[in-house]
Image (cartoon, rainbow, N blue to C red; front, side):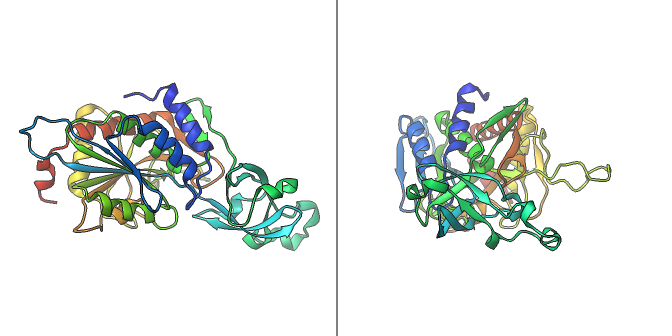
Length: 354
């Protein structure tokens, strides 16, 4: 499987959508548009998750296929308007994890009309020496929509306004976390292997508590789950020129297979299966070094009687900032690894000891 122009165009649409946690409708509509023609069952649940089923295609006398849940979250980090100070200037709160240092002067799009805006801060000309030494606080920042203020309202979400750009081998845009995962899952549904019952969950509210995944996993009750996400790559050169030996993932290293993070000890049988698949198919991969962070697997693996789960992420730099950077090759290899791993899945994998 290759990443073609059509997949790049899909990613461009997904990244352009405004889908801050709790208001994922624009991405949901793109998912429905692409998958309604190919899904056996498709529905939107009470929280807004898109739940898609692709039935296995097996002989009538074959044993029951594995029920495999694949999950990718639709939401992104962003902002919510909370109060108006007049003249189109709004106070706001951050939704998800964003570093305030990224914010002054950044262009935004606000609400379902994508009203242009900017995050305003006092310019350097009007600050004194003491102010310049202090970190900028969220309370001193405002979202300025100017004369378009009648097109927005309190409670509207806002997101960075950074369109997708192809920079040689790289992809640069806002919300690559996790529109790369959404685009990957759409392609996997369209090319679902016939040996499994594929249960695709496009989840909501991952960035503020894994809430959609919890509901989706309970509804699907799968035999196992694979979460598709994007992970920060701590692979930048060190300031003193020394070798970076503390990286967690690297760009150009292939899909990052998780073994442990803040929320999940990933199922070792599934980790082995992914590694063995990568080796057999000649697909590059890397182990995401254990540590902080987490994915929807943190909620999925604890549902019902327990769901064996593993996460695979596409590494990227500058996570939760106005513009992230990923490699097209890492995306393509992730798509190839997951598809091959699904084709090779058998019930015996789960019968092995953990």
